[in-house]
Length: 448
Image (tube, rainbow, N blue to C red; front, side, top):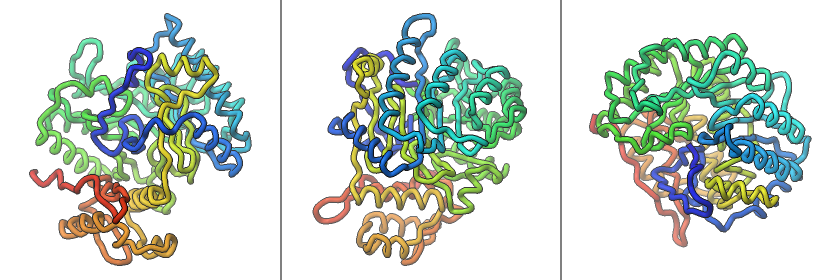
């Protein structure tokens, strides 16, 4: 959950426990206040000049109340932000990907939001785009699913909280799978392209047995996709559970292993970042054809889009420029009411950063990397350019996780569960004499 309770100008502490922000698929460790609204505006104009396709994300934070002025005020500012950004882009730029995240707004707000977005942006027809919406199990009905489908959404991600936020009672065992089964049936009936369900692990009340029971129940419901996450650093909609007591590291690692074993045995494929998909899913087909990509919204079957984020804490990626809106509600509203973008920090990638990101993306998406092709394209010697990463890859090769030679890096079946850790060995910084690693690879499952 995004922070809507801080006072204006109050500093938001970033814990940065890993490479990825829990609310996105972006490395935010390098973000700083030196990148602001003007940088984003210049990047938007560059996007228009190059006519790059777009990926849009709109964040509607939980905690806003329709009974008071906060909801109206937020959507007024959200509309203003869409106008400020949209006037710097072209209506010829196709919106190939769209995500409405956080919480699903009420029908009145949703209709106004989608109408306004379509006035400003070129949404695709005939189901050509991937338009996804997050829904919360307890707050979503068949009527809601039909309304969202009518608004053009063709992918749905169902949030299943493991703790009742009101009573604090555990519902991890999914004693009654009927509600989620009903929503999955609704998605099938309304012809959504995919249904995704979230699966969290790592809380103190969870045991390997209770987790196995929950996982088995979800597998029986046959969603197209499952997203597995650690409650120590959860996605946005589960952030309110992050501070609760965690289970032991041994149990957490065991739950993760159970997850991989059971999902793979059930026919799902792991494509990285805790994302499991069925073999006939769009993402699995794109990976098989070498067309899978990764951006601020995770894995996608679309090519290289400029990503534009709207709302509290939203992140934009426009070519090599990253910008993030403030995560403080008061500051966000104040900036937009002044007619200014709410960008609070960001980062501008250098050539070396873009090279590393390309290496990580292709290795994650293709599960292999053509070293010779990369060397020819960039005019470098791979082992000399990535000496620390190469040493760690050699250790992984000895552990049977990767196949390594001068021409290719291939992730072996035993390494599929650690594809994210394997890619992260390239998270290194260039200094005056070469490269230094931010961290060393560790086999987290070695103790099991």
